Amino acid sequence: MKILLRSLGGFTLMEVLLVVVIIGALAVAGVANYYKSLERSTLNAALGQMRLIYYAQRMFFVNFEEYYPKTGDGDVSDIMIINDELNTSLSLNGFSISCADTDDPDTFDCEADRDSGAFFVVVTQDALSDMNPQCVGDCP
Image 1 (tube, rainbow, N blue to C red):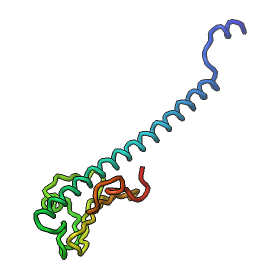
Image 2 (cartoon, rainbow, N blue to C red):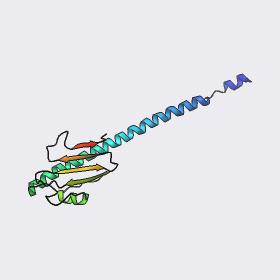
Image 3 (tube, rainbow, N blue to C red):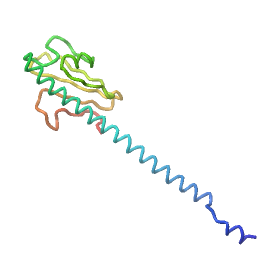
């Protein structure tokens, strides 16, 4: 009778549990990599938005001989107003975009803050480079 039971085959409980643990570990690693990729793509989108603001600011300066917002106008964080004034079509994509009144018509400072608070991206009037726009905080 013992021989008959052995010939049926199958997996033991330990073998099945081992496979479930391995599949779970692979799933956790995959999800972690997915979220890292998602944050990197969000950062790249914000960097692109800040480059667009950089070029829009340059055009604004050509027209008005000062950067946006104009001196004395105060800080602006309403995306619709920024889009109207700079003639852009920025979208938020998980960020809050604002441009600060620097009290100097020859400078500008705009930033995109990640809604989660993990990092933000800043662009200034300096020439575009690896450091402009730049990510500040817990950057992916």
